Structures are given as C-alpha cells and as structure tokens.
Image (cartoon, helix red, strand yellow):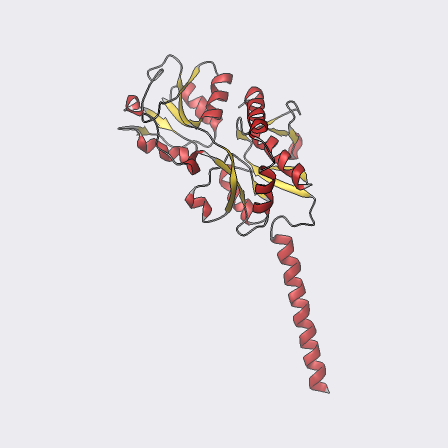
Length: 277
C-alpha cells in the first residue's frame, strides 16, 4: 500500500512535468493559434521596404516609442495579418538582431526585405517570395561613374553595400574594385556617396529609386543582361522568415496566394512615392 502511494505520487509528478513542458513549449514556440497578434520584425531603415516616421502619414503603423513604421513591408504585413485574422504589431529591430529575435520567440515573423539565402535557411524557414527585384549601383550624379554601362566601368571604384546582406558580397563581381567597409544602413551609404567617401553602393532597385527620388544629387546605374551582376532569384527575391518547423509558414503562404500581383505593384508604388530615408 505504501509503495502504491509512492508510485501514484511519482506518476502525478510526471504528469505535472509533462503538462508544464507543454505550457512552456506553447509560450516559446512563436505564434500559436490562440494568439490574436502577429508580431513582425523589421529594421525600419530600408526604404521603400520599411522605415520610421513621426506621423501616421501614408497609412503608417504605430510602433513603440511614439513612432510609426511605414513602407512596402508594413503594407504587406498588414495584408497578411488581416487574412490570418490577427492584429499586426510591428517590432523595430536592428538588422543583425532579426534572426535572434525570431528564433528566441520575440517576434513571429521577419518581413524586412530579406532574401532567403542558403546560410539563412540553416537557421530559419522562409515562405514563398513576396517581391522580386534587380540589383543596381547608386552613384553621384554627373560624377565619374555616372552613366556607366557595365561592371567593367567600375574598375578601381570604391564600392560598398549594407552590412550582413548579399548585396555586399556582389561587390566581388566587379573587376579590380576597392571593396569598402560595409555600412549599417542605407542612410549611411547615401551620406557616404554624397560626401565623396565612396563612389557608390549596391542596392535593390526599389531602394535605389527612393534614394534618387529623395536625393537629386544621386543616380541609379542599371545594367543590361550580361553586363551586370550575376545572381539567382533567391538572392534578389525577398521572402518572409519564420521559425524552423513553424506551421505559420504554410498559413502565410496561403495568405500571400490571395494577394494579387496588381495589389503588390500598387503597394510598392505607394511605398516608393511616400518613402524617406
């Protein structure tokens, strides 16, 4: 009888431990079906995909600290949250902190103009692409590299790209280039070009269009096929990052499938028109 009571007590403790593990797993597994909020991380300094501003102008989303997040990523995140029946919460996080924030459960998804590189796929899962772009170089208008037609024209140029992005690695494709130290954000790169510290920086076309639109001293150099950068679709298209094994990937893919190309083009044009650095 005494042994039986001990056995039952051990069994109850075991059941309790399993129950606690299930609770903790639910709490730290990112998004779950019983939460009404979709927490999306982005750096908020990569126009026209995402940036911060002091007002709600252009349908911006309020974030912590009294600021507002705006841009294509915000618009797409809002569309996705709506289709998932959830409230959107944008969390501003430095670029290098996005993956750790996702894997730790601080956010549910990364929607930040991020390409699904093989290296990143080792740490997180990605959805289908939600935008595809081209790679260009932003230079000083009427400067030495203004009107360049091929990568060969950038021999000896001082070129940079954003820190921890595939853009920075593209610099190696330019013959005899001076690969400058990577910079943290696009504002820094624009300032460096204007100050003459670098000759140009590599960018996706939408972000370059914003730079040129807001800085008349700059010019966007585009390349014909065979004269520019070589890249795969995974390196230029952007996708949404989610936790490894998360069922959120399938749900977001379903939501993306309901957002037409016409709507995506409209949202990008809207973002470019209202973007600021």
